[in-house]
Image (cartoon, rainbow, N blue to C red):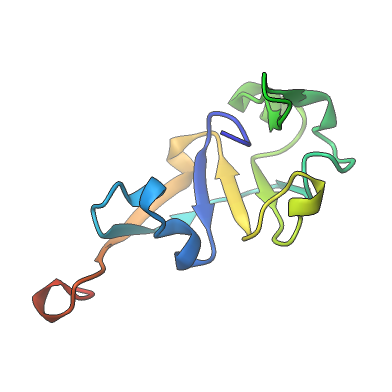
Length: 121
């Protein structure tokens, strides 16, 4: 994954509801995410406090090779990738990544799709 072994969140449901993330379940989790001190990254090819952890894949694509310990040692609790940074190896939608599952609190399961009884519950 682009930002390493993290739990990924988005502000836009259109990002989260893509087939590659829902695996056809038609479900989304609505969570409270405790970001704490977040490192804002406007693309992996831009300068940011975690630049030394950016590596290149075998296909030449940049990715953040980061563990929870390394993130905390750098003084951060999460990573925030701002929308519209794809031209700098970034993201189309705002995305937040946490490297500790205790920072995410599921609140609701949204069942989306179909219509009738399978609408939002």
